[in-house]
Amino acid sequence: MTVVPQRFSDPDRRVSGRARWWPRIRVVGGGLVLAAVIWQLGTGPFLTGIRSLQVPAVLAALAIGAVTTVCSAWRWRVVAGRLGVGLTLRSAVAAYYGSQFLNSTLPGGVLGDVHRAVRHGRAVDDVGRGARAVLGERAAGPVTHVALTLLVLLALPGPAVSWLLGPLVVVMVVVLLAVAAGSALVPRRGTGSTRLSRLAATVVADLRTGVLARSAWPQIVLASVVVALGHAVTFVIAARLVGVPASPPELIPVAMVVLAAMLVPVNVGGWGPRESAAAAVFGAAGWGGAAGVATATAFGVLTLIATLPGVVVLLSRPSVNGRVDADD
Image (cartoon, rainbow, N blue to C red; front, side):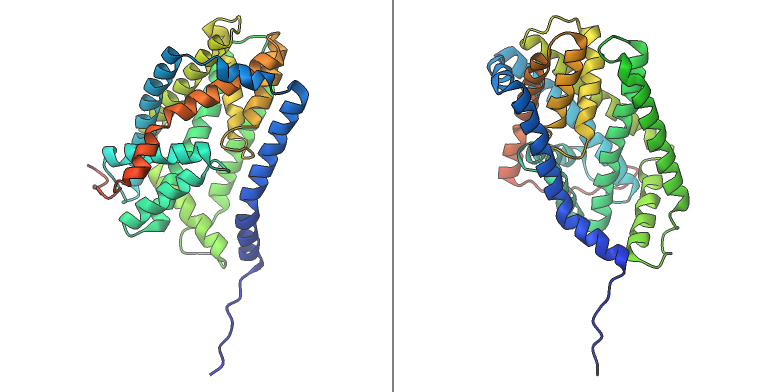
């Protein structure tokens, strides 16, 4: 009997290659961006951001981090429940703390989400669906953040960021059109000639069920808005720590724009594009690029501190079983 070796189509081979090289490109790209900022401004702004930290600010970051983590875990629980792999809020919060700490300390910024998805998927005996639940809830955050950024820029225009409003609108429209076109063109579940097309169909179907359903998206949007505003408030605290001469209404739009730069998928644990965008926007505002980098550094350290409860979670290795029904 002749054994015919399994052959993969060209799209499958391209996906496999991308899976191997994309994480490295992200880390290298983020490192290059960070190196460019250091080359332009030196290490002084980074040291200033670290030295500016104070105990009240750290406590505030921990409190805000607790709120944003609970909201993120709630968002995940909503999506997972809709996909039939629900979990308790307590288990979701614990797992989310652990994933945030890993995302903040490991290269790439997504390994914590991978860890969370795999552990939950194994707990419910469906790794694929567990991974798609994490993918859905994580995708909802950036989309909401960009939309909220546009609203904030319209409500609180300022010289520092008004020039970004046009490009952001274009980007948002392109993203929405791409999502709509992709959703229309991707074949339904179970059809298609390649693994890639079948996987795409499954992902789109789960997004429709877990994120875009009427019973899901209002909760997801609300949780995502609270998370985005929580990060923006932490950024304002960081700016005040380093002595930026601006009021919160002036800083909130800047914070939303700079934090949107973190969505660029080329970074080192969130570092790189954030500092570059902060330098550019703060420079345009007349506050100085160095102040922007110092603020971004203080923000990065504060958010890292806010994830430290995740160390306890990872060391205790809590179970993410606690499976519940979608309507629980």
